Image (cartoon, rainbow, N blue to C red; front, top):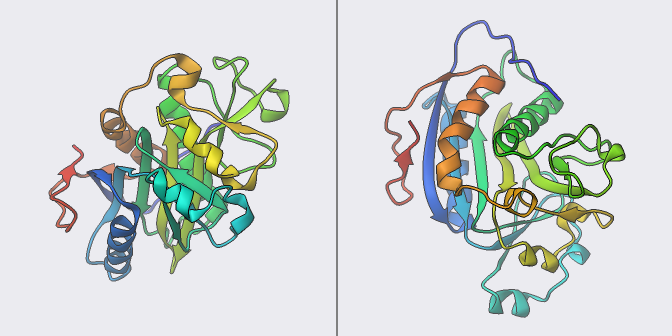
Length: 254
């Protein structure tokens, strides 16, 4: 898959922030605050990069039946359970996963939800390609997919011997300003995914760059490159001044 940058009447500024490892709910509150500020024009387009502490999130289309463990057993494993307003079903975040939350205004020239999802998928695809894993689209399911049987080759999911999901996407777009984003499995503990039916997809498994290639850098090490790639894909200029946020003095991606 390839995605051409969006045509724009003027350059956009994009700020990137590395938040480190955080619980889900404080970062959700931060997203909501930044979303309001972006709608008001108080800040530029902004993307938050981070790892989450273990958490299962239920999107607007989630079925509780896709959570396979009780809240008590999840708590015993240190996994939180949170209902959120993003699109999609059930997903899991954990250390070793690069999470990106772009707060981007799609108006006036990028008001296309499917195109935005393609941009997020293409960003992940380019990142894992640089890490030695070929990946792409699934004909029926959103997200980034690879072939466990042949991680260096991917044309389509239907041609793959063993399709596995590498990256999840769930977004919310309100007043054409985006929230939420993607979660790319670099080297999370894959056994945590046994507690859910990821994105409600029972017929395929989940994998990671580390499981497919034998190694993977940390999310922090990949965040700067992810920022560059996302800027290239959506056609923004990079901008990295300090951003005033209230989550543990985040490091600005430069």
